[in-house]
Image (tube, rainbow, N blue to C red; front, top):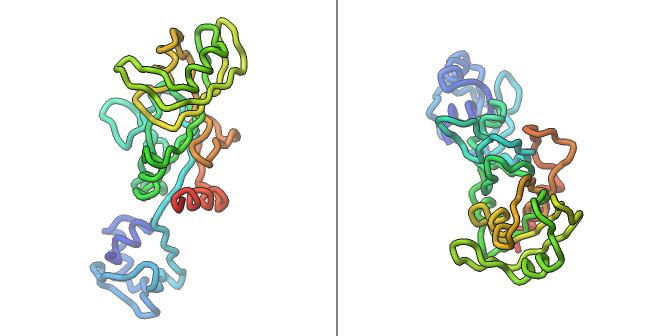
Length: 239
């Protein structure tokens, strides 16, 4: 990796600003002063310091967000605000992307990372990573619906979903439910309920795989994953 790219990625300014630091002799690599911005280094093995302070290299970022409604699960959009727009500059530097998508009007758990391998493992159909949602549903949700979901339901395009686990929290004109599925088809939760003659009016994702939404996060807030949560993801990747 180029030295100026490393320093810029770690928050020491733009590449132009980093070159100024280099010219001033503020940067050392393995205790030797360096002024060449294009110098290639190993960010893991080489020791880099600025004014005597070590530069701690971090390759990947893992952020849990409580996504609000009205925001797109995308990295950029010409018209609407995206989840990446909600991040501060320090986190955006790592160029994270959302792992999977939540509809614009859906709230809740969203993971953002720049770790493509991890994202692939979480989204791979072969892994069958469970995702749990909480929803308000217009219509009386019954045990018959739960049975149908457990067998898989046929969507409007003829696709038969994999079995889902439907838990009825409140059965009323507007029911409250939790649903766990292992797929991520377009608008899947909404379309599953449409298949049984009902309509989702509010949807929130509670968890994805071993990661559970931190309910202390306000809508639009986010935090990096804890070491324990990262450990759970590592176990998932290894299985």
